[in-house]
Amino acid sequence: MYAKVQIIGNLGQDPETRYTKSGSMNVSFSVATSNRYTDASGTLQERTTWFRVTAWSKLAEKLDKFAQDGVLAKAQSVFVNGRLEQREYTTQSGEARTSLDVMADDVLLMSARGESGGQGGYSGGRSAEPAAVAEDVDDLPF
Image 1 (cartoon, helix red, strand yellow):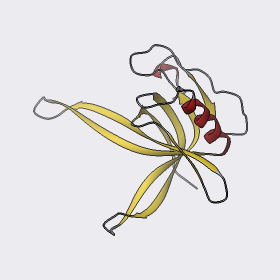
Image 2 (cartoon, one colour):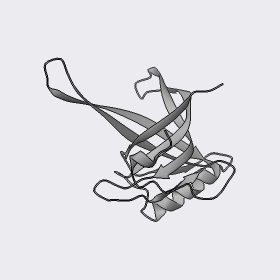
Image 3 (cartoon, one colour):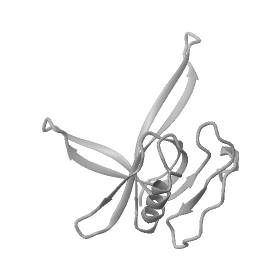
Image 4 (cartoon, helix red, strand yellow):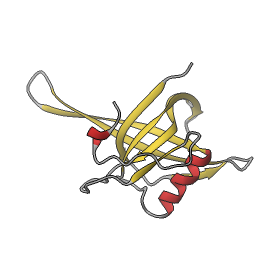
């Protein structure tokens, strides 16, 4: 079993395309989500959570093409459907750390900040057909 996650947020940086030693392509990017709330004193607060997202295989190829075309770039709104995976790494100072990363199964490009309408999307599943276009968050299936 694995943990599924769905995220709606904005890219914090342009996507980065990499290749493994065996030649497999992957595309990674960070997504920021924000939660606004009023604290006990009545002050409006905002908490931002960052997610590291990685796509592989055909999904990575499609996202790389979107990035090259300038469609997928910093500040782009996205809907990501994927699974959480634990990653161990060592900081430059030698400290062992753990992070939870999102392995994308599907990515839907939504309208960028200030734009109306959707851009389309891509499912990394068995089909190579684009996912449905979302006009706004209300059109998402949850």
